[in-house]
Amino acid sequence: MKKNLDYYMNLPYSYIVEWSDADECYLGSIVEIEKNMTCGDSPEEVITNLKEALEAYVNTSIANGMDIPEPIKMADYKGNITYRTTGLKHYRLAKIAKLKGMSINAFIDEAVEEKLQETA
Image (cartoon, rainbow, N blue to C red; front, side, top):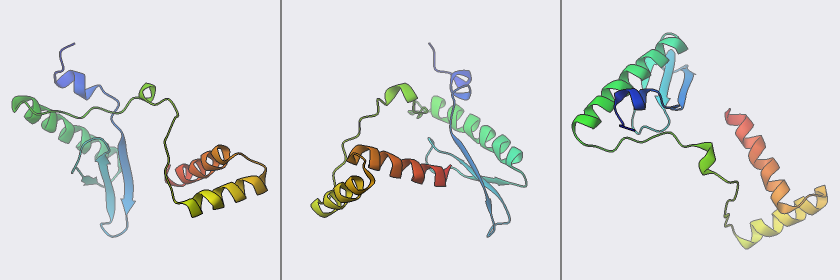
């Protein structure tokens, strides 16, 4: 498949839109594209601005032979993570997991899920 503008514009990029009290507007960015940000009076306006910026970025990148990052795919992740920590943290994890009647993996998975919910 030829990777042209249509190809990239139809990929499921991750858009983040949040209200900024400091700027008194909505700010948005595309997770997979470095150093991009736009603003608008509504989330819809920010998404429109981001899509226009993405189109300009893709056109410029194609014209200059630059690599264009693509969204990560869930199929690329199997659920195995190698996690390294200190002996003290490992010990504390083991103690708390045992106290809760859980394996260390189950405890870490629960903690990660709680943190992910905070940022969703």
